[in-house]
Image (cartoon, rainbow, N blue to C red; front, side, top):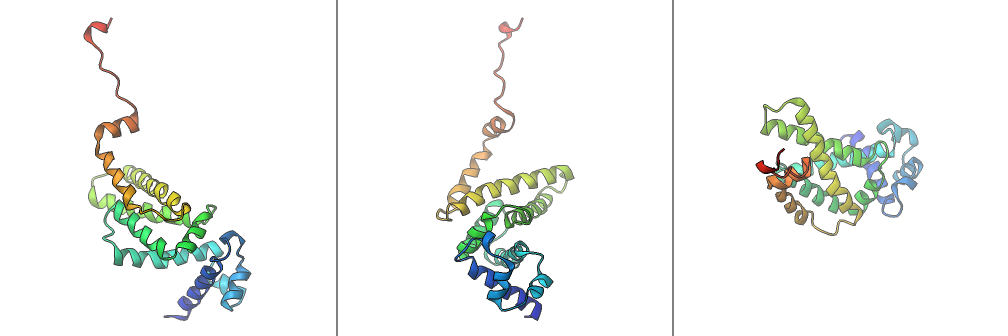
Length: 194
């Protein structure tokens, strides 16, 4: 492993250890470098801030994990892969995802999923116009985050797979019609028209 990667990993491990006892917002760069036994300049050579470090740690861990452990081919596969990955570092990710400001991990995961869904949509429907691809990838990413974030906040106790089966209800075209555009207008009787 190159020295740069070892240093980044050391900083990430130090942050992870600190997050076992305190929330991310309370941890300073000084805390991280002190725990890692390196200087502040070393930290800032590699990362812009602690949130950049959190994102790097997620990015370097989740992508290989998802490719190794899931088919990574559907909405459910991606969500269940993330579930398994977060559970392996439960305290760290619950703590990291509690922060929702600029450069947050939640923002990064949303962007990560949006790129994934855009790619999948363009593979499934190559004729789909760009504006539709963008809209649908944002919609699916937002929906995934809407399931994932409450699950993380609630302690990751339940299995997400028990909830993803509810998505099959969306195959009901009448339900989709009602949710997306409202109830269809009642059919009017010929005699009631004036």
